Amino acid sequence: MKQSETTTGKRDSTFFTMVVMLCTFVSRILGFVRTAVITAVFGAGGKADVINATFAVPNNLRKLLAEGALSSAFIPVLSETIVNEDAKRSRSSLLVRTLITFQLLILIPFTILAIIFAEPLVRHVVTQFKDPAQIALSIDLFRYFIVYLLLISISSVLMGLLNSHDRFFIPAFTPIFFSISVISSILIFHRSLGVFSMAVGVLTGGVGQILFQIPQAMRLGYRFSPSFHFRSDDFVKILHRWLPVLATSSIFTINQQIAYIFASGLTTGSVSALSYAMVFWQLPFGIFSASVTTVLFPKMSRQAGNNDLSGLRDTLQYGIRFLFVLLIPSALFLSFFGKETISMALQRGKFYAGDTFLTASVLTGYCWGLFSVGAFNFLQRFFYSIRNYRLPFIVACVVATVDIIFSLILKETVLGVTGLAIANSISFTVGFLILIFFAAKKLKGFDSRMVFSTIKKVSLSMIPFLLFAYAATTYFGGWWVTGSNIKGVVYLGVEFCISSALILMMYKLMQVEMVDRIFALLRIRKKR
Image (cartoon, rainbow, N blue to C red; front, top):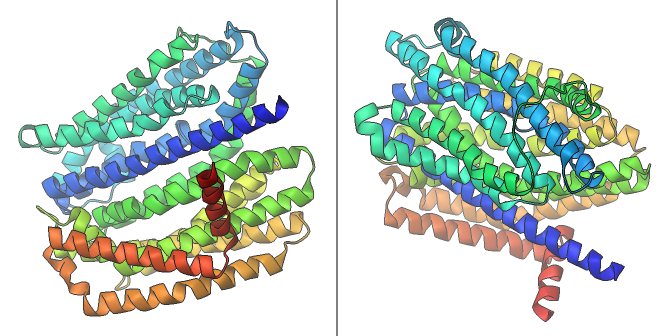
């Protein structure tokens, strides 16, 4: 009976993981579509810079006050209350109501003040625009966009609530709903409302994300009347876990906002190039890095709780190696075929070949640090699992400082906005090396033989791909200049398929452990 339950649990976990990954993939694709619509309608110049720079504020703040830091503290506590209560859900419902009330008490006044003082905030904090028309437009947009922070904060609590009850589809689908709302609004209203059509889409999508999740939450027995039980043990526990993670996350959010401020002071189109490059960079990072971290973080937490130093060492080592296997090929593909990929996705309407070239240059700068950022985030979760919040905060400060220093230097060179991306890659590489050093010290070393074996296998596996990529970009790479068309889509599809086939073939030939496991699982499933 126990074995049957265990098997069922594994099957359910696999199914849920596949659902979340599929929704994440669709969400990322729609993110491309949303970006393509913005570039086609507003281009990559002044108006697009205003949209991207202004929306970056609530988009970055949501990582602190909504997703990320808050979720990492909220979900474990809520899951604990669900396990230890009766069917009436009085304890978990009280916790959810208290948390939402707490958010409203903080964010409603914050939003009102941000709207009132939008002009000084935009002029002196949000941007460095020199064009008075851009500044005026940014101020007006900011007053709409900042409301999204309130909406996404409520939505994130609902997401955490449903995930804690193993309800994954609705929370995973809500970002898709948001993208559809923004895309539809721009396409329908851009002629009459201009850039404010995006504001309509953002606010409609934010409200829709809340309304989309409430029915399922209510079917689970939750109600949403206000609660002011801020001294309850469960709520205090959330705050105690949230604050140290919030401090670390805030460093990176502020740092990212500084990058947008620096970019707004460079040539026109720099902010958009930075923003659009991140969209493409986020595709492999969001799918591969997030998946590895999501699966292995709970495992490391259990091993740390059981003082299983050997198991913790194996899990950490496996995660770093797995990220190397996934992210190095992704970084190389985007570096070699970035212009082709961006051209097919964005180059139409008011988005021109020069915009593609600049965005691809920034993307390459970010790709140099794709593995470092993924490994850094994973190592952060390792230290959180062993209840060490101080070191990640200190290293985050080091990373931000290094990033700002190199940004100030490189942005004034011929690199321009690309220098900001390279500075980001350098800083996270420094952070990764510091964290891996202290992790090895804490775990009393790694099995360096396995680590170097994976590095060697991946490096050798990349040789056929690099030869193909060099030949393809050298002799057939000029087609991207013409922009999005059927011929280009076919070329890019062929390049992607050949690249993937070469990498997988070499991974199989070199017996890369992670790929061998996937093939073994597929064989088992086929036999069934």
